[in-house]
Image (cartoon, rainbow, N blue to C red; front, top):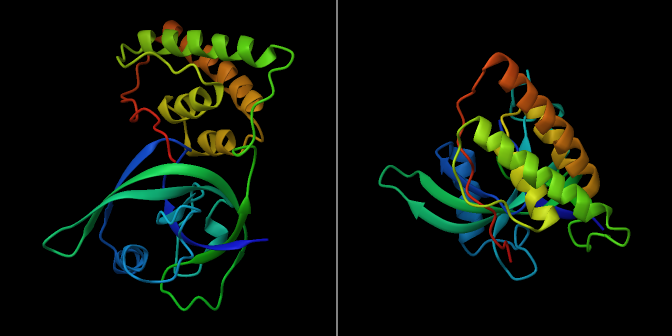
Length: 230
């Protein structure tokens, strides 16, 4: 059954387990934060009572008006609020962590808030164990980890050793590579870890070949490593 979730449209994609700092200054989203951290309704709470909202990416070439739902991708990621700091000028500085993915199935037109509130359902395999009965996932994970290390070496990017967990690795690679928004969104929407890793392996090998051949080194920095969202 769909549940209600406040939405926070962004020009980027949030992946489960990744840290997302936010500087909230627009009035309607300041109100969203107030509703979450105050004594308001529990629509944005997870099973443990942790406050959160849905991050959805704005489609490339679109602008988000007051009710321009068509400008938003329908698959997003819940952002759990870990830290909230209110500044002297009324802004909020948040530290959030990506949790589970969701799909928007409707908009709550009776929410009565200046920000969008969606009706959402769980998306993908986030609550299920990855199947590695045939060993395919292990082989694929090792291949992606090696290619990711080579990618970072090619770009001269430092960082800690890549994680061993296939799903965590898949989300980290998706967030860390220099990609356009549409490609990141496709990786977020991959139905399972194997599909996501397969796509990433192809992209990694292609990017390494291009950078090696043309010497193009885009400016980038790694996102914060995944953390346990629970």
